[in-house]
Amino acid sequence: MSKSNRIIDNLSCAEWIEQLQVFGSLESIYRELPFARKLFPNLGDAFAKLSEIKKQAEILQMPDRFNEIFSPYGWIAYESMNLEVIREAINHYEASGIEKAELYLAETYDEETLRFRIKQFNGNSEFRRRIRLVSLAKDDYLAERYHACIPLLLSILDGVVNDVSRHVGFFAESVDMTAWDSIAAHETGLQSIAS
Image (cartoon, rainbow, N blue to C red; front, side, top):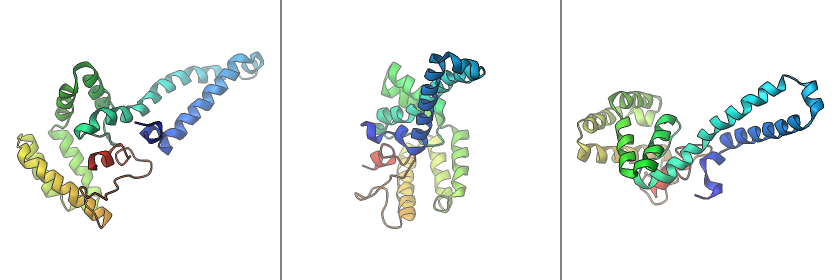
């Protein structure tokens, strides 16, 4: 993945990282100038917390790593995906390979998770019209009838994309599944799967 097409380079992430870098530069100046420490003695506490914030900011790199590993297998990161699931999937992949990592990912989509995700569909009219079919696919998935749920979900996906785009389905050669400042609709996400 080239540096220019990473999720972490999305505007919302890039601005946050740039601010962290500015604060890091200010910290260096603060540490080097004794009079700054005398003028602003409490600023040292704020900078002490900065290293913890920088460590937490490493999570911004996880969707890129996830897509790099899993998109060839049909898995992509998305906005509401649990970060712990992303982290654990990457750990399973690095420790045991793709089969164990995919098994872990599949197991995270239990009945409760699927029910919650399906409720989220109610906010979108294109999805809402297909709730009954999505629920049937959920039932088939939980009963391990993958031969039934996979084609159903693929046809639902194609129909939703066609309804949203108003002219082309998910599997069309000309489909553009990218959206500005998105994780799922980043070019390494849905677009890579569509391709």
